[in-house]
Length: 189
Image 1 (cartoon, rainbow, N blue to C red):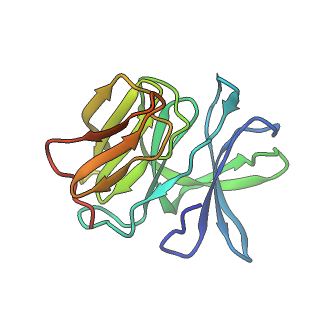
Image 2 (cartoon, helix red, strand yellow; image 1 turned 60 degrees about the horizontal axis):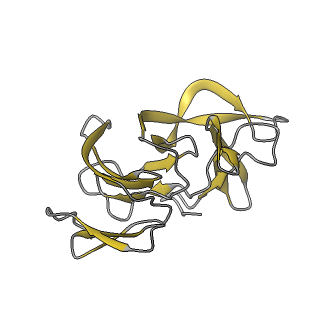
């Protein structure tokens, strides 16, 4: 679970054993649930929806966009960009057990990946790298806080979380290979 810049945790919840939707929950240790972001259901191998991977935050690397951003990718392959410190005004959603209503964060943008995903995205400054069952995608968060697709790498299945080293993206694939991607450097600070 990543720690946010306001000392909370973002917990990804998978759908399989709960009556409600899976999604992302923001928790203040010792203080309870701050909000819940539900993610759609979808049968995908043995999963039933929600998140299998972990949400990602950008506050340690943010220089050109807000440090309050987070993202998550659902089993359904939808990448969600949200502000973890702002709520959707007046909106409450059922929690994962459907026994409580919670506020929900401000969703800034979404993008549908070419396939489902159990990968954890990597969020560095204004770039998001996310793997899925048919490859990997690179997005940029614009100054308007929207997702702009920069590049795709089609082919192998990426379930692992990518890393950036010396401006290159490295990711292990289910085909047994470690891939190094990128002609242009993605700066990690």
